[in-house]
Length: 592
Ligand code: ATP
Ligand code: MG
Image (cartoon, rainbow, N blue to C red; front, top):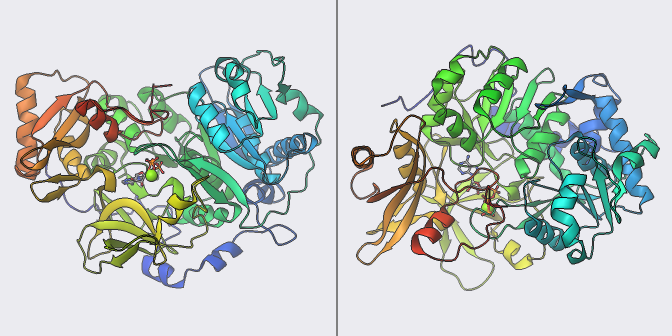
């Protein structure tokens, strides 16, 4: 289906006046120092993420406002007001103090989306303790590897997860001093060598003075998704809160009366920066669904929870698309006013799907574990060019660079001033949530910077209007007969075919042209695979892309391999195709 290249915003889209109305003026006048002034700061002049997110509101007009609302299939919803969240996180910080865990020590959390996870993360931050939330579906090996890389001293987990994943491995995590257990569904927490978190919290005082952390003190250790290789541990500081606040305002347009739902798990950086921190900074009510993806349930939650701002990921959108429009038509979303997506390129087809099914286009935005917060975004006030990730937010300077031939480190780059030229996406180093290191890998960290730019490892281009277009990861780009082919372009064309639910594209070595494009496709519900359909999809791609860029081969899979954060793992498609070792699969969904 041919679509217009621009989605214009309507009065309905803008019924709540957006924070970022005049992009050019805001970019001109923005300063990170001024952005910092929107926060309170600690009494002694320091900065602490949890203090800004929780205590600032608990001591003010929002004290009885609901901060977090947990829903699950079993049992009623559980709500925590800002005041209650402040008390509980104080208790948790006091528990850590009693255990002798302090500033700079490292705490890991392994739990489903339970209230205790949120309390532990925020309570630890108040205590100056560095936090790493992990996906609860990780297997024992990836858990132990991360705790060991991070030299974790404390682990917060549940009785069930402990017995299943930790107990047998405990000896192999020598730095771990304390394991604090939450009882799941009335279970018991009497395992030797563990402590009952519930009992400790009840015994602790609910008054605590946030530790005087400084903007440069480490706060969070996040592991990357492992899409292109072994996950890297990125260190973030308390000063990141300034970016979390500014981006919650500009890119998610959060207003205090919003009901916000970020569908990402806190085990992925999105689920922490925007599933915990940013919404609290803006005093909104966040929905936390304890269940896994289910199309019908998600539509129902959007409707009955009266979600106004929704932040999700392309993988979820593709799954909703796969389930078909009938399901969506059984629901109405009158309160929904803004939808955004991150994690992977958002195919134009998905942007349009939002417009048709939810009544709102989906706003793609781009960032990475390393950037700590949203950097490039489609915001409420912009018209959308479907397929573009939007424009750099105020305070963020982006450009496209090429690498210069140079010996050794640091690498040298040249900024490409011309629009529409492909190169590596780079950001002017120094925004507050920029990572401050890869744990135990200083050399790798240094290699990410050149001439004052942070090099993202992603290829992109910028058009004459300043909109950025994702081409592919530097590692995934296909070189065929002298052309550089970005997988995203090919995947987006395949997604336009009515039968295609998702597509992953790789380069397959070829003696004549270097690499040929091979596509892996899964089909939407209701379509069956036969030769005619295969030829039809190939024909469609050839018509859209031309013979040089269109896939030569196409294979069908029931689902594509993806990371737990929902990204298609092209390196795995490639390794399997070529019969090579699969490499690190610790983050592979379903692979625990
Ligand atoms: P690893 O670094 O371990 O390979 P990862 O890069 O997937 O994993 P994340 O930090 O979770 O780990 O993901 C960031 C990457 O995701 C970006 O560098 C980019 O490649 C991709 N990405 C995120 N958002 C978008 C987007 N809106 N459009 C295109 N790509 C995106
Ligand atoms: Mg990465």
